[in-house]
Length: 489
Ligand SMILES: Cc1ncc(COP(=O)(O)O)c(C=O)c1O
Image 1 (spheres, rainbow, N blue to C red):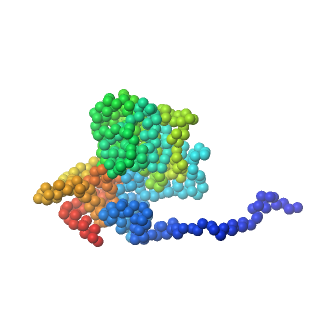
Image 2: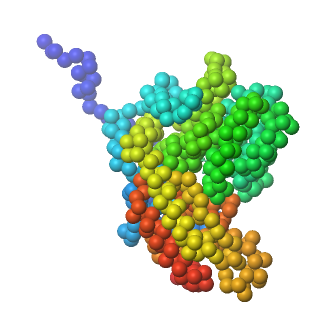
Image 3: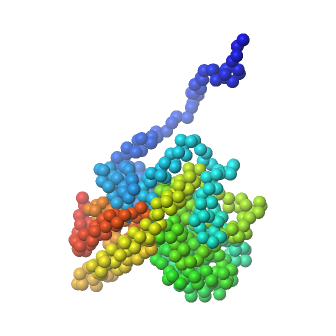
């Protein structure tokens, strides 16, 4: 008797390749992954200019960054096409707390892939998104324990201001934001982002009111004058504004004012959170807890796009706490997606296991101390150094003030136009001559931003400070000449 079951029969049937229809869609001329990796600089330049951002290329060229193609990245360094190691003191504006390609984060992602786990979490409860939300609640003080997951800082902040608006209710629709704020470029948060460059000619909402950052009396006056204010949104440390902190007592007073006037405080910790300033959240330095906060950047472990909004439960429930309201701002397609969530779960664990928050505080103090010595050495060039943990700003004087006395009156009329030029020269030459990358600042272009990975060690800080010392030691005239020469080379 033939013991073969129907299932065996099916498995034994030969697989016939489908016949392609004669009119099958021809494949466009596409690049493969391997071809993408192997693009040389001329071809890469063509593609970037043709399909991404020709205007941005102009800035890269000005700084000499267009000559670099990154082949690999590991720890504190990028490695370019010539095998040159570039020390990363830019850190993706705070996105690289763990440095590049941290082995534990890579391994967690690799295991997830090998086990063929699922990504999209909309149909079933996701164990990954749920565990990440739990972890974030564990890291958050007070009653901050309801989490929304998204794919960027902008999305996290969008969800934060939407939540605040709904929880505050229709009688308190106005939102206060700060001068020099940056909360993202998507259409909603643009209304509370202060940069004219980004706001452009876009039509923005008319329920946003602006106050100077760090001025508690201005907040007090506004709250008293307008009972329709329902929320105030503030970066705890302003990043795009040039690493600006409010006075310490500001935050206690802000909390009290918000409570008195029934205003929800939204703390944007996208750049300054996740250990960057030496505490998990920067607001923890001041012993206060906001109603809603947001994280992104390093939350994705430097490998995944993850943003999170974390809110007090009662605020969250007011807005979305019933079956009827639950889906109003439920997570989007990629919110809480599997591998990104697992990456973030591992990232939070590594942050504590490797004591990176403590390291940020320690290395930040060391960096600031060394920069203060440099400021004393070059008082005509460096106007200020400031920061908290490894979120540090170094501000140059206006260009005319760095020049010999006789040139100052002539050049000072150009100071506004020349804003950012010295940071540009320094940034370009740090890369060219010292293999070091730093970041610029949107609103105050005289500031270079230093947000190295939180794995930074003294040797990295020393390399950066010694390089800057050596460069500034050339004197401004030589720096300008060297920069101009680099443009011609
Ligand atoms: C304070 C702050 N909020 C929001 C954002 C927006 O984040 P993303 O670029 O991930 O959308 C940024 C980005 O730099 C930021 O610094």
